[in-house]
Image (tube, helix red, strand yellow):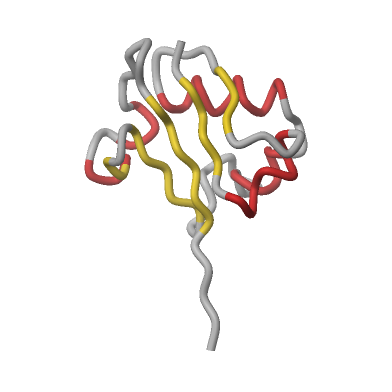
Length: 90
């Protein structure tokens, strides 16, 4: 099954783990499964319209899903989905 990996800033929301096993044929399915397992993750990943927040980068095997098929990107059993929050400052 695919693995969801999260950066250090988001580990708190998945019980301080760096990764969890998720189910799903697409990135959207995998993220929804992660939210079912760890409901606190929802607010930090999705906006009120249900879209991935702009500051959250989603990768499948090191490729940004923006360069693939977005949330419709198909997953294989061995894939890694990574969530990284962008940090900015001034």
